[in-house]
Length: 111
Image (cartoon, helix red, strand yellow):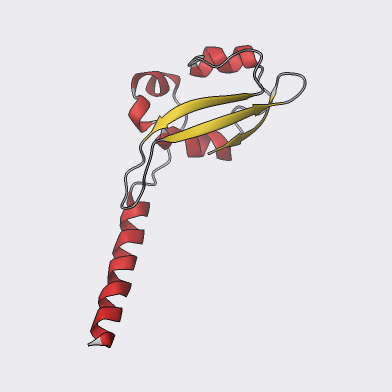
């Protein structure tokens, strides 16, 4: 009986992991998609981060590209909503955090 429960638990864990990764598609950044489909921005984020797409941009350039979304020009950390990534046990809404250096240029992004 314990062996059956263990096997079922292992199979369930594998299925959950596969399901959580099944929607892990990456798309090239598209400004139009970013602005039109807030709930699915997470598809664009991975590519944006992997290609260092925003690194070195000024706050003004980021605001023009991604919108301001109530981010203040005097803040060194900006937040953007990227939707709720699908998956089992994936809770909460996802955001990215854009960090600026002393020269007001993007130094890093955290997802």
